[in-house]
Each structure stands twice: as C-alpha cells, then as structure tokens.
Image (tube, rainbow, N blue to C red):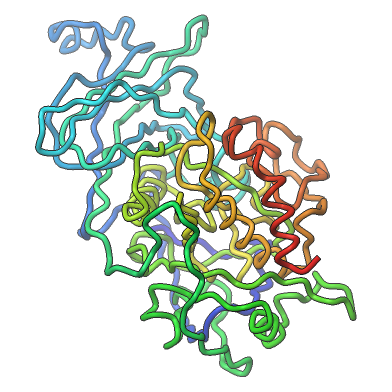
Length: 464
C-alpha cells in the first residue's frame, strides 16, 4: 500500500483519550508507481472489478471497436458472478464527474429472484480528501459512485446512462465493483433492534499520562485496554469519569479551551473498534494523519440503502472500507465514525477515536472537523430515533473534548469545495450536514431535518 508523510496540518499529535496507548515506531511504505492501484492482500472477502461495455451494440460492432452510443450508455448484461453484497461503479479520473444515472439489479444468493432496478447515487467529488493533500493527489485515486448495499447476491446487471440533454460523455474506464465483505468478527454485543443501545460496560483502564507515546506517522494502531472487551468495544463512561479521563489526557484541550473555563464534555458513548467490525489493518495506508482540532462535526448518510439489519452493519462498514481503499484508492475509510440504524457507534478512519484524525468525508472541510456517517439513505426515509440519539451522544463527547458547544457556530476555512472558494472563511453550525459544506443532498433531507434535535440533545448531554 502507498504511504504518506504526515501533512502540515497534523504536526501536533494529540494524546489519545480512550485507551492506554503503546505505540511503536513503524516505517512508511514507498509510493507506488504512477499507474498503480492499491493491492489488497488475500484476506476474507473480495472485490470483483468488471469493465463496462457499450450497450445497444452487436457483438460484431463491439469487436470492431465501434463504440457509437456506448460513450453515453454503458453497462453489463445480466450475468452470474461470485458472491458479493455491495456494488459501486468507478472510473479512471477522480476529477471527472459522472453526469447521468447508474442503475443495477441483482439476484439474491442461491435463488432465481432478481431485484427491481435500483439507482446508485453518482456521488462524484463531494466526498474525498481535500484538494492539494497527498491523499487527493495520489495516482491511485479514482472517481466513484456511492456504494450500494444489496445483500448477499450472485447475479448482476448494470446500466450507466449519460444525463438527457447533457453533451458530456461518460467517464473513461468505467468498471463495476462487486464487494464481498467476508465473515463477521466475533459477536460484540451490538444492539440488533431499533431500540437505543445500552451504554453499560466494564470500566476501562485509564491511560497513564507518563506512558511513552509514539511519534506522528507511527503505524501502530492505538489499542484498547483490558476493560475494553478484548479490543472489540470501547465501553461507555459516565460524565464524571469522562471528565477525569479528559483531565488526565489534558493536552487534547490545549488551544481549544480558554484558561480557567469549565469543560463541557458529554459522557463517552460505547464505540465498536475497528477490530470489532473486522477491519484488516493491512489494507489501509501506514501511518496516520492528524489535523489541529475538531471544531465541527459533519453528518452524512452513506447512501448505501436501508436494506441492512443491524447485525449486518459490521459487514456494511467492512464493505465500504474495502470500496474506499481498493476501488476508490483512498488511504483508509473516509469517515471518522459510523452509526447504524440501531444507534451503535463505530470507529472509522484509523488513528484513535479521541484524536483529531484527518478524514476524507467533506470535500473542502476535512481540516478541523470530524465526519459521522449514518448507515443508510435518508432522502425520503426517516432516520431511526436511535441513530439521531447516537449522533447526539457522539458529538457531545467528541466536540466537548475541544470545548465546542454543539448548538454554537464555528468558522472553518474552505480548501475548495465547489460551494465555497479556496480560502473562504465559512461560518457553520458546530453540527452540520454535509450539504452545508458542499452542494449535495447528503445527509438526505429527512436526516438533515433532525440535526436541530441532535444539537439540542448533544448540548444537554454536555451539561449546557
């Protein structure tokens, strides 16, 4: 895998909050050659990458290189494939947008039952690393649609059509990506219904502030202590214990909290670790990249659809991880956290849940922010209350570590988002939707309309 040196925004490496850290130095891998694509080791799960073909042509026309309308309509006919559960479409140039529609239909594994046609969100450049960063400029990065969760399947058909009235042709190098997430890790006690998850759990071992910490760019993942359920789940803390822990790791508040000011830190919620949802750490880039602070939380929906059970959530996240890294060429999963429909919270991009890890979730505003993705599509479906509550709990803690009022406003500097020019100072809600920083539907109108509720609940959890 490619390796990156830490960017200038991540020179200050904050001490992790949640867990005793034992970080050993790790060397960064050498960059890949220009045309290289990240290679995923032989681990459970797989990706099938199938080149799309022009539609509406005979076999003879295709064999003689006659593309005709193929530049505006491509796809694959109905066919049997190896098992998969998530689909997406990628193309060569990440800067080229796909103006059109992507539709798939799939056959349930081991059956003759085909789904109706389902639309895949074209996604384009709205998610991803900020312009000018090493991650965004990697030659391995590709354009990509949002991934769509379809459940275990072994048949697929796809069609991609340029938008009516548009003179733009389809991007070069269109490929269908079929992701098999592999088997789930051991059961970690996630909630599996729509009720709010319990927060109880064994008390964690408080970090020793004198314990040696690894340098910036270190490749050893922060690990959880013996009170953390075997490394699968970071248990919840009540507010008093959360404040004690934050005081022990007080450098997380350095520069964020005014001298003598009372910290308003919400109780830390339970968080399923990367190990808990089955992340294979050999897939991602070595080393971590940090930003200076966390002033805002951007809420997203993954646009993967709502046809998943909470028991399948780890598989959905594992599939998104593989799609972001192997298919899209990112250094790791783009989001800092994920939330499922039952309100379970999951660690996203590696580097430590208590640290200001630089994500790739809101183009132009990844610096000094964190990205929270609610699994599902909420443009016309209401988000479950458990998911909204989980967003409030997570932001009360995460923003509280940096002295941020969830009901307040913050100023971020745009790195160039299309909606805001590079260098623009933008006043945003501390809990914002993706659409506040980029011209997009994300996080869906129904979830976006619930952010006011999340802000109020989050501030109350902080004791404001």
